[in-house]
Image (cartoon, rainbow, N blue to C red):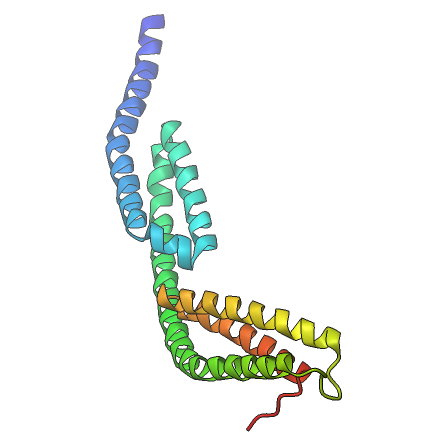
Length: 199
């Protein structure tokens, strides 16, 4: 009698185990498909959409945990939304790339102007420093401390400008332009200290 009662229970367990086994393959395949899609954009995502990548990685980790617990139905239910998240991440990456290209193009144009302007400012400062160095007395409005500060500023400008050019030579027009604008600001301050008037 007991044996007859246990038979349906064993059958149910067997059917459940069989169902789990049947789900394991599709669940594993679904996870692998999503991970392959993510692998193709991971490097770019780290650069252009790092927060989005973190969120997707968290979803992947959750589904992997479900897989390890043999909760294959949860994996199969969760992979469609995860795939959509990967697709959204891919779109964000493409948008980030487009914005980066646009910023680089604008920076290159701005760099051309700065690359023509800043060296002229440096030359003018250098000429003024050389001129005042030869004189016994500094002109009215330029103190000794200001003159020494201007000379030190000139050396800082030269170093910073070389750094900006190095960034441009490496292909980073955005960073080069940012640094070049800082150098221009430094040069304007030194010109004011040395009472250099624009021609």
